[in-house]
Image 1 (cartoon, rainbow, N blue to C red):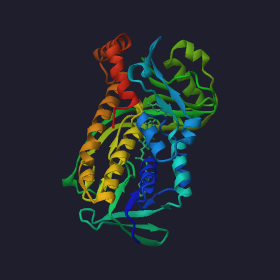
Image 2: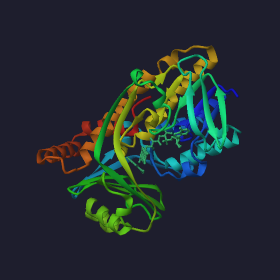
Image 3: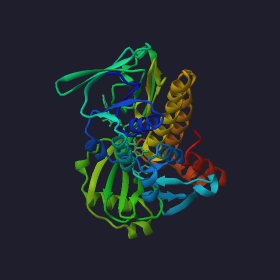
Image 4: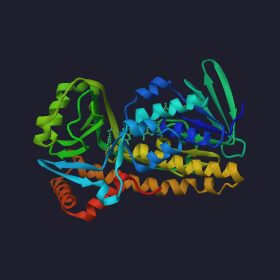
Length: 389
Ligand code: FAS
Ligand code: PHB
């Protein structure tokens, strides 16, 4: 069987790329290791930059996002009993859209199905062959049957644990990594959010985040040791710890309830360079990971998709490889800025045992400076709403 672009991975990166290419008449096949239900069961990102909102509109799947998403013009930062607001709109002219990755992925699945786009679920043993030639192909197994897909290009959208990055020879890539000695324990609860805007909180007990999905669905996180397991945390223990980390007024107002999802996400910074090998292009978590503090994971996947889509479209329109040749450098330039912002915001807001008293003093001084300085707040706001593509 042959197609123009094989997309490995049916998460947001793969689905958004497939949808954009489809609207240009470019044929794709999406290969997904799991089931549709499993992919939609993962609770992940919650904040969309303006660039991703525009891409969803361009892909023709922005209607429900605009109906059900929440436009936020600011975000709150608290430390101890202090809390201040970053006025994103005043500083940048833009806000962010609060709309869960789960819903965004659902919208993309529904568009793919409506378009009759080819998606193969439960694939196994995906192998990338001859990526460094002009006749690449992919083999994969479904059940007991092995299939071959010949193509022009391969988009590796298969996340951090996928096969694509591993298919680049070790001597053709360089990987950069920083791990953090803590994770995020997250809860989804059918309770009204404690605040109209997100609260990024830090205290001597560690980081917490008060987020949401809509007026009836809240998403909360607390920093936890990287050795913790989700079964170590009862709902009651989670709520009590969260209350200790947010300002008293919000702790008092917090409406708790049973968790409908509870999970721990590890924190890591990671980048693979380059993001291309021959006709294989890495996109999203397959190429880079950020700690979720700055809400950049899904949003850097989106800018990768935009750059790769533009390069592929130029190739199929006029046969030029220039856009594809420039893809990796262009994507990495924006990714490293997002890595820096995510590392900076994570270092500012998390506490851990290896930190010295001096480190804590630096955190407080940084927070005081951010609270009191318009230029510092503008810099934060520019990064948070999303740097230009
Ligand atoms: P994804 O990992 O979402 O999708 C990759 C897909 O490829 C998966 O469906 C997988 O099943 C499939 N796949 C893997 N190997 C394959 C193979 N060999 N063959 C076929 N298919 C294969 N970002 C934020 O901004 N905020 C957050 O709060 C946040 N929380 C997160 C929590 C967790 C636990 C994780 C892992 C990530 C979180 N992220 C968050 C980042 C997340 O949102 C990613 O940036 C986003 O999912 C990236 O999308 P994709 O690149 O499509 O990768
Ligand atoms: C979320 O709502 O899941 C969320 C929001 C902002 C972040 C991280 C996660 O920075």
